[in-house]
Length: 477
Image 1 (cartoon, rainbow, N blue to C red):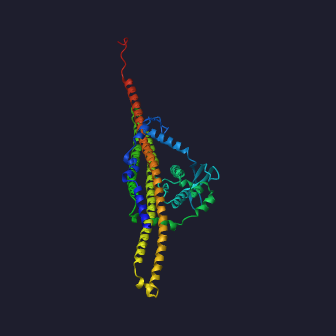
Image 2 (tube, rainbow, N blue to C red; image 1 turned 180 degrees about the vertical axis):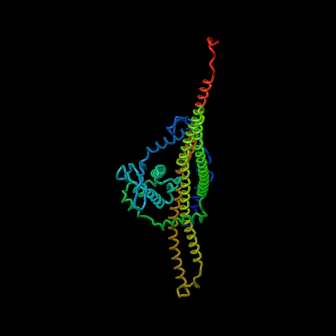
Image 3 (cartoon, one colour; image 1 turned 135 degrees about the vertical axis):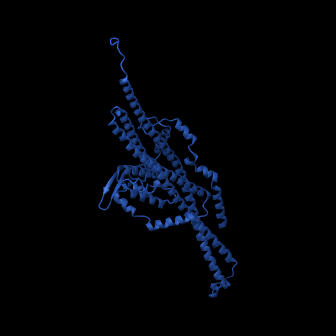
């Protein structure tokens, strides 16, 4: 009866799983499918400036960015937990120097004693929080943290580094605060509210390093040994692997473009002073040469701004999504480990049931127990009792692991659905912003060169006017 019940449950799960065509539609990606028609229509109907800092014409992409920002503001109205990271501060000790960030929290949740909190946390504290959330919720997608030393080899105490790091930590905490499960975690609440000494005492509790390493090795081995992964998770893994490769290629191209732009900037910086030096020896060409030098200098400034913006606002988000794909692969490995344990339990249960059936028709006359003087029927009964006990324990374990597997699948599906929505919005905004920057860069350069042309033409007109001979008057004739 137990065999029949389990097999029917497996068939129900297979029937409930979506088809491959449905999965491919669920995993639609802007890198593959392009922009939605509805989004294009929304973009055409808006004309808001996303930057607010330029007097130049606004490209059509700015409207989507403004629309997305408005949508996020509307979502915030329904939230009851708000977290903001600011005020980086350097601390110098006898052994090391480090930076802390102020974490401000506002909430209306009943679990919190107060409505507002302000604490200081360093990067290692954020890292601890993420590790604790992964240990507590192994089948949920925990947002990634920025790598500790990954920002263009900048000084980790420089204002530019701290600004980018602050924005990344802010995004990390906001994603956790918006999560329907992770935001209610006790460790997250302690992170947001505990004083320094309380927080350090709380951090000492938890899984040791050896336990984490053992679990990690177990999960990695499970991903390779698991041969019964459901089709929907096979499609999910293939998609994440392909997305990781695409973004990795984009990241490498972005680095190559940044390198070429930096080399171009060096050449521009050497080009501008040539016109200035030339003007010292050509008195009649001074205005024209200075106009050329000024235009080149402005283009240098605009190129420098583009390089900095590409590194901070394009390259870093790309790296963040590479880390996101790694985090999803880790969740899939942990899910595979649970299923592998379930499959192993089912195999062991079926083996014990086969032994029980074989025992019913076996003759224990020549068993070891009978040779030791025991009655063969007593030996047979003892073996049957032992097998019944093992089958009972394995059945209970199989039911628990089945429930655990179903919960893991449900958690992963829900988090992936939420992640896909955010990813599509983030990547659209990322690409639109990149297009805006490039358009505005060329618009600024064009404006600078047009200004230089006007100055040169004005000088030529002045020169022609001074060179035209005056017509003789009647008295002279």
